[in-house]
Length: 74
Length: 170
Figure 1 (cartoon, rainbow over the protein chains, first blue to last red):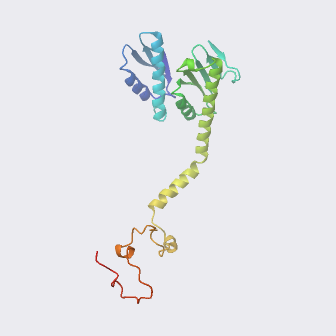
Figure 2: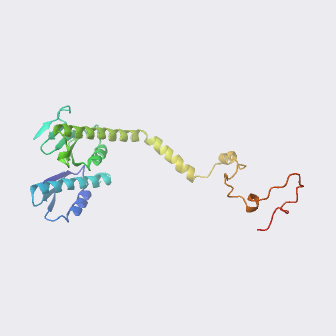
Figure 3: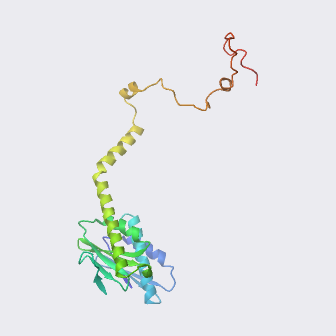
């Protein structure tokens, strides 16, 4: 599953921190890239359902960290 | 498959009942990003929340973590959207109240710090009541042993010299 985080909404540092937390998940790969105004994260797991679940959890984690740090990076 | 929810503004709310997900388009001119953050934060425990920008507007995708908890499909999603909209409005309004009262809040805070830090003026000193008791002592904690346990004088006796025979040995 591919997640697209807009730069004006999500902090890149928060996404990196979230990826760091999720990196220990077994059999799950995270590929981070950038596409214009978006940070792009592709989550690949054993099954599509697991990919989706992990991706959505990652999105929540990144949003929570972004909010806690007061918004996107300046 | 996306479809509109009954009772919701057309074009602002799209529901995907199969995925237990709903997409709201929030006008950025009405609801600033911090208000959307505040509302989204309240829903992180119940939903997967994704926020995206669409020009001036913001797009919020809420996906129920427990689809079985969304009772009644469209009805449950409508309730979810309604709760989010209420929280969004409350967040935006709290932010507006804070903005309107910012001057007052800063003034009160400055006065509090100023009173704690600044020396009193001559007028303040002149108005100060130095004759006032330093503190109340209803339990007599600040009293000396002699004052507290002094034997009462018998009625009709001559007042003796201060610190006389009333002061017995301990």
